[in-house]
Length: 169
Image (cartoon, rainbow, N blue to C red; front, side, top):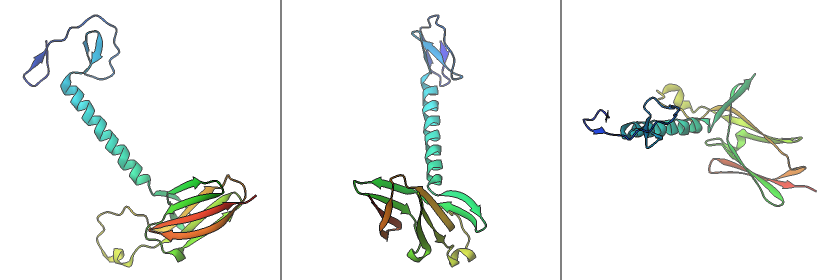
C-alpha cells in the first residue's frame, strides 16, 4: 500500500524489475515505471509552466537586441523571406517606423535594412509600466544567396516593410 497523501491509498502490483528512477516519485506498476496520479498532475503542471516560459522567451526574442556600435544599442527586426520562381519577397516587421526613417541597401551578397524608431516624446515624461516594443536604431542583414538581384518594389504596409527583389540572369 502506498499513501498518496489525500487520504486514499492505492496498491500496486510490484514485480522485481531493474528501473532507473528519472523522477523522485516513480513507482512500479506491472513491471513498468509509473508515477502516481497526483505526481502525474504535478508533472503535467510543471510541463505546462515550462512551455509557457518557452513561449514567453520566444515572444521576447521577436525583437532581439543587436550589438551596438558608435551609434549606441540597436535592435534587429524579424523578417520573413519567401522565394517565388523569379523573385524573392522579404517582409521586415517595423511597427511604428516612418517610411522616411528606413534605408535599404544591397551590398554584394547582403541586403541591409537600417533605420530609427524614435522614443515618443510622451514617454519621456510618463511612468512606463511595460516597454516591449523596441526603440532606437535598428539594423537587419539578410544574406542574398540567389545570385544577382535587383530591388523591384519597396512598400511599408501595416507596420511591415515589403521588399520585392527580382532575380537577374
